[in-house]
Image 1 (cartoon, rainbow, N blue to C red):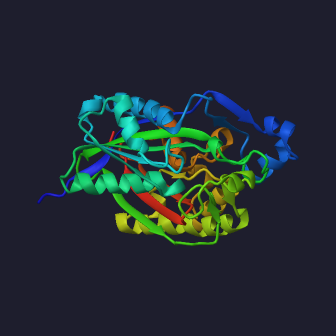
Image 2: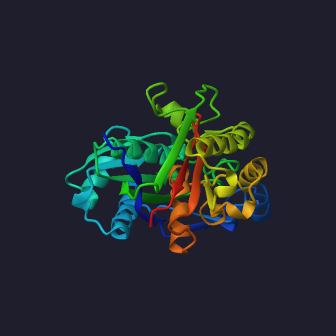
Length: 330
């Protein structure tokens, strides 16, 4: 069997219109614009409108990705949606997106790898295409995190935003596309980053809601310690699998969680920080949408061209982490 080369054929991104600046938080919480910027690098983020859900953001990004790839919804035979903020706990959001965009010929399912979700989705799609099982797969990372952050918790609510990114993945010219993928996890049960209640372990009772346990909780220092190790490790391992060196990289698209984490990863990898695309100042941490939003914005600016070797690298709740090395195909 001939092993096919799989890569991204088109990208689309979407963010909601509502902008929440640091000054908006300053009015409601004991915090300041300077405090937030100095510790995170975030200046503003987008929040969904009252009538928007994750599926709406995902659908808009998907339509743009299809247009970018010059394809119709019917051409898609699988939809993979990475999210930790689904429309519903039961009924996968990918099926809702499938209906909204008219991908009538597609199988559809969600994956939950938090902020690493887009890399996990690309890995699954690449394997299926190389195996000849599917031809055109829509990989989406989408989040409506403003729905699950505690707006009374100044340490977490300032970090997160909403958005979506979508990629059409299919067969590409030999030697191009996704050269390698390295995904790993370090399972933990210490509430480093999770929503404590609302699942089957702790159902959303009146008491849990009143105690604000149905909101996202995070131990920031623990996440930071994990991230500064995971980002460079995943990138190195993916480069090794691709037979590439850090000097071969045109750009790196990291998970947009914290500017200090990105700067630390650049230092550990001995890659100039200006090769790391950063847009968290505008969008904050959009979890599974984050890496795709960065890549999609860079493509819109013409910063990535055919033949460029790039790395997509993320980490997230679970704990999960991973990286994909791609030789851009168009």
